[in-house]
Amino acid sequence: MNLHQRAFSLRLLLSLAFPLLWVACGTVPISGRKSLNLVPESQIIAQSAAQYTEYVRQMPHSDDPKQVERVREVCQRVADAATSYLRKNNLNDLAQQMKWEFTVIADRRVNAFCMPGGKIVVYEGLLPVAQNEASLAIVLGHEIAHAVAKHSAEQMSKKIRQAYGTQIGGSILGAIGGQTMGGLAQVAAGQYFTFKNLKYSRDNESEADHMGLIFAAMAGYDPSVAVSFWQRMAQKSGGGNGSDLFSDHPSDAKRIAAIQKLLPEAMAYYKAAGNTRTNTQATPSSKPANTQPATQNKSAKSVSASSLYRKTKSK
Image (cartoon, rainbow, N blue to C red; front, top):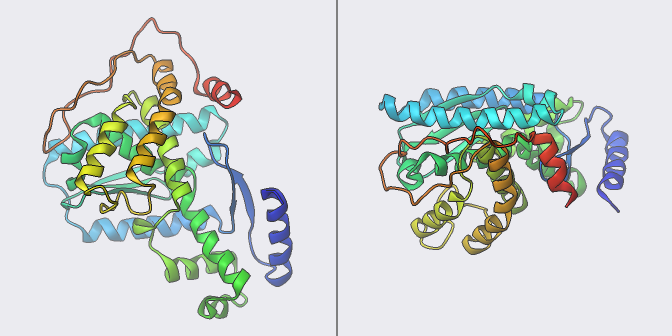
């Protein structure tokens, strides 16, 4: 039974038991994977915005204005690249959902995340490991990809399906009697996670690696630095997944090997955007090096993201 057949069966089953449920199938940008969501994205984005506002209000912000400006610039470039990809591929509704905001937190943990709707938080502890703006762009591309791919909705939907399918979690089932899907989303979110520390599946993480490389490349950052960055992360975590950025990710070796296989596709986007220079070895720093995206080749032939997408998917 394929995804559409399973979706139809699930929709029929849930509509009989809970007439007010909302079920939607979608296609993830870039990867082309089919996804099934039971929660309206508008509901998730509203909850995410509230959680983001509360989180950044409670946490100490970076007091280094130059550092904040550098981080915000990289955030904006990668976010703009993601938005551009969506618009060029006729995903305007999804592009409009992304209301980008960026905050740098004074926290020594090695972490960053992007909540649904484009709310991005970067911890200062990530910057010494990133070492340069290109590596920071790799991380941000990965986190932005989670939001673009609607991985939060997918994980919430998974929890709801588990609750329905097995009738486990009586507190949830008891709480949703007569509620709309929006109310169910609130119950599920309260029971299972907050968006800032949501654990994605390994498939989600691999998909975000893929999409993130493309977004960073489109923003003008050399995607090949991803290999050395994740190697540094592996060393920092002692070969395990000790960092927040590594939890529930594929193992170090498998992840790096997968990224290496994805680099030709990412480099095609990088060069199609007019970039010809590749990054050299990063210079260690406690902050991102003031390294701008690679110089664009003005004579390079312009190729749209949508046409390149069609080429890569047809291979």
